[in-house]
Length: 79
Image (tube, rainbow, N blue to C red; front, top):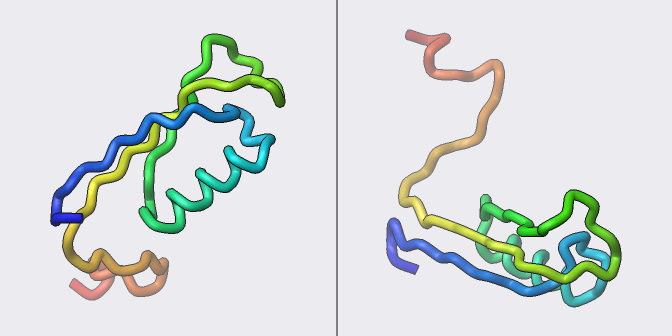
């Protein structure tokens, strides 16, 4: 994927991630595209095991090393 490239997927699966397909597709996308956004689109607020609907995944590839947050080593503490 190119720097600043965007990926948007519409997956039709279980909104409650109760079946194997839903779990596997979610695990696969999240393992390949770290920090991927996910939005379950459902017309009701109660998701049951059998509900199937749209799950929107979005990802933007950002270049650069952003590091890892640590409470004791923030750069502003050394300025």
